[in-house]
Amino acid sequence: MKQKLKHYFLLVCLIGFGFNANAQWKKNKANEDTKIWRYDIECQGIAKKGAKLVKVWSYSKNPKHAIAQAMKNAVHGIVFKGYGGGGQGCTTFNALVPDFDIAKEHEAFFDAFFEDGGEYLKYVTAATDGSIAPGDRLKISKREYKIGVIVTVQTDQLRKRLEKEGIVRALTSGF
Image (cartoon, rainbow, N blue to C red; front, side, top):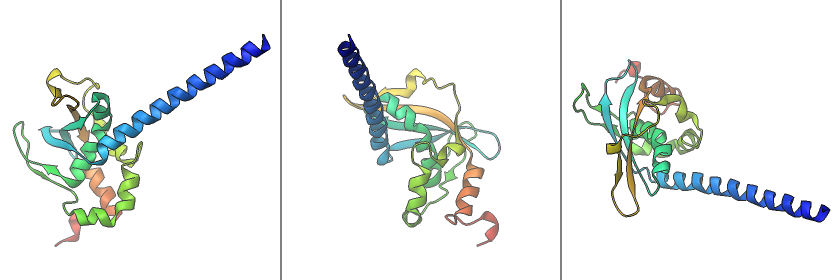
């Protein structure tokens, strides 16, 4: 009886470790898909003052990974890409850090800023309840999805944070 109990305990432990390893693998896979920063960003409409309402199109082999990385991609897009104008009252928004050499100079800051659960989460929120519209879930090849997620990015607060780090110049600093 005691021997049987040990076997069950060992089996439960192995299964538990297997689930943990699988969850870690999925998180690493999502990060791997995002590491190359492959996404599209577009204005989705007018947000409250100091914020931008954007739709981020993330690419991944797994739709869940694309959804999970959408917020990270949105902040990255505001910082390094910007977006063109369009309908719904949208105007062009230039990237906060248009020179990629500046990003290389501050690589340690951005690595920490964009890590899982990093500081970037302070500046972005989901604009919807988390559900994806049918037209925003596209299968673009046999193994790849393009997922559109609408988020709000606090651009004014994000700019202040980058100014504090000395990455961008303050708007009041002149020319």
